[in-house]
Length: 201
Image 1 (cartoon, rainbow, N blue to C red):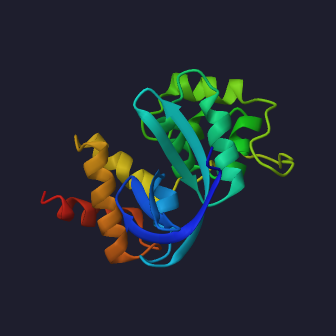
Image 2: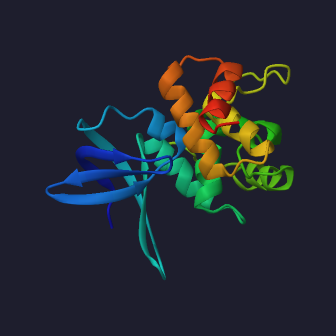
């Protein structure tokens, strides 16, 4: 089982990357947050890998930290949470933010993830209660309901486009294009406008 890859980043799409290690190219599925944080093509990259073998073959899921991989595997243990939903949660919440949301049963923060409804968000915060989501020990801090966890602009933009009837794959591709043009510090309205322009709307 592959647990870590170190090699050259050759290709990226809205959902996958291709990493060459010792002459072998590995296709790795990643979340939006992970892909956005990768270096330029041709640079060396280190990814922590979660391997999943099914009837149609083995798929690799990549993360830039051990905490993200651990949170992903724990999320997979929740009934109804598949790889797509687990990646969506980690697109809008870091492992520490997810642990914070679970500690305070903040299902609203979790439900902001694409494809995660209120019922599934409720199940996630209940079933993850008391489980370690990070390699280091996590201690909940004081919490104020008036200051909810802030989702990423990328995740919010994808969700907004999907609300307009755009498929998730097209939405992710358009948002990646917009963020590439405007930069990672771009505001949500600007990213959405640029994404719609990329879609030709």
